[in-house]
Image 1 (tube, rainbow, N blue to C red):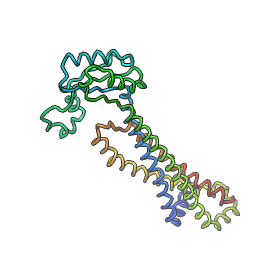
Image 2 (cartoon, rainbow, N blue to C red):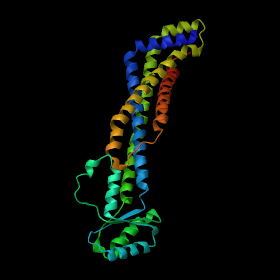
Image 3 (cartoon, rainbow, N blue to C red):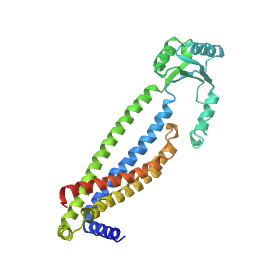
Length: 299
């Protein structure tokens, strides 16, 4: 117990003596882990959005003119069902009233989007699924070029190209985030190492005396190790607070106000992320201490 108290008091005394360097090390640890937390939350949020969108990869929407007669609609439906690449059990007709009702249900928390609409602006439409998502382009081409009464088809849309662009943007975002986190983590390790080096230099005479009276190597090393770990822990705590503030004030607002993008954070993400950030702080502090002790402390 006396050893623990001694190590704690020596660690605190060293942090106070090198306060500016310690604060700088804590700040860099906090920035690196904070960016890590924001990258992970952003990655999770956009990953969930892409997963929701990928469910519509094989989906094709065909919008009809309001002038389309029942006979013309039946002919168009028969053509859609006959396309070999289309799943005939998943060809669904949706009236404009049904489309408006779905719109209201999806945005029920934002009634200002639809409560002042006098006339229904949404068209009648068909929604179909291809047997293989890769055939979406082929199906869209056949509908655009071969469907009967093509003048009654106002538009044909699919999500495949948009999702592909989203995935490319998402991959770049993830790569840049990972590189940034690694670079800042290395800087944090080096800065923690510098603070330990300064502490070792400041206590070099005391260390010499301790060696003369028979102190063990780890008895001498532990205060420096704990100093580095303490800087990492405080930095991780600051990073967690920043990440939590970003979630509450920014990400939650985006999820609430951009419901049409279907953004979301996975349940339980923070319960895994925050302990990992604490562990990351400990690892950065321990690595910085180990580097400094290995190079500058001969015991």
